[in-house]
Length: 253
Image (cartoon, rainbow, N blue to C red; front, side, top):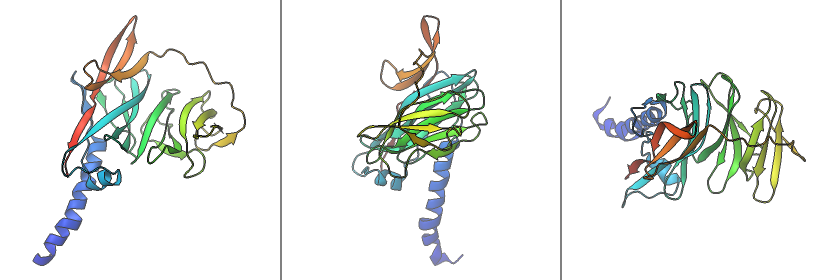
């Protein structure tokens, strides 16, 4: 390599390579539960912060984890939410434990500007996660589906591209049939799937949704407000198999 080309390579190639590796690393890290709140990794990527309208040059920008849903089946636990700043959503996040909360990974890549806020586990191999793009307003609701126990996840759109809407509730009563109610901001659109969530058709009337039952799992903030607690019912009490720090990073560009 010619000496006078190295600065250009460094600026345009090596830095981009480091950014790519840092993003990959934060999504593929294995988190080990040692009894203290775990920190989800976040690399302060300049173009992502700027695209979210965040200026972090004068003052550092805190980055927060928001957890909205938890579902479990045996030793498998799924937790869903997003990463955000003070006023903008940055990425969706899906966390999975296959050993009752001892270790955690991100089985699906983070999606910029999206949030995942509802979950359903049907059996050991099949599960669904629902969410939507958050910026500038909720739109493009979608499903993430797995048929191999969470080893891989596939995204499927609900409705037309660019349509406003957020998932209010969904339910699958079999491996193939499910329904979802989407709040469009003007009405509640009803979609039905006969393909396990891969495709959706709008319907005029929804089937009778199942009654919401008390769950043996819940997610909520700790008393000190510094972490999210994943809680499991234990008789009349609740145990905490895992917890995650709410503030995960402080970014200064």
